[in-house]
Image 1 (cartoon, rainbow, N blue to C red):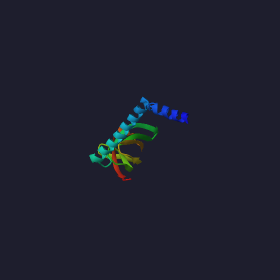
Image 2 (cartoon, helix red, strand yellow):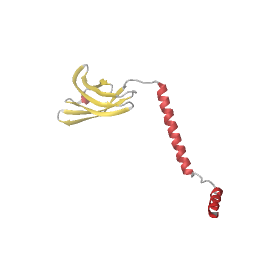
Image 3 (cartoon, helix red, strand yellow):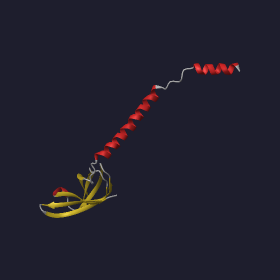
Image 4 (cartoon, helix red, strand yellow):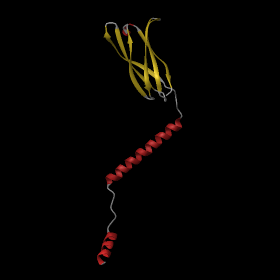
Length: 141
């Protein structure tokens, strides 16, 4: 019985264990990340700057893949705040005001603030003509 009392006295006299500095650092980092995420979501909700898909198309490369076939590699950027589903992009070759040839490509999904790559095939060399790219239409997912 005396030993039980002595053990209890010894336990009461010990200092509580201290939390290592590394645990404090990780906990602080986690707290900062959570607060930052919450603040970002609140700012997005309050900004109210929603816009439809804003599509920008860029020609990246033109290459001849066979005797009468040319591939125009393009990149589309969606700068709007909504996703474009089934985005139809048209490319047309012009000689002055005369339309020479056109081609189309469909992008399944182009999320907001993202980009996708695709290609348009032509039988005429696009380097010999003026190429115009136009987003024709999309669906709301």
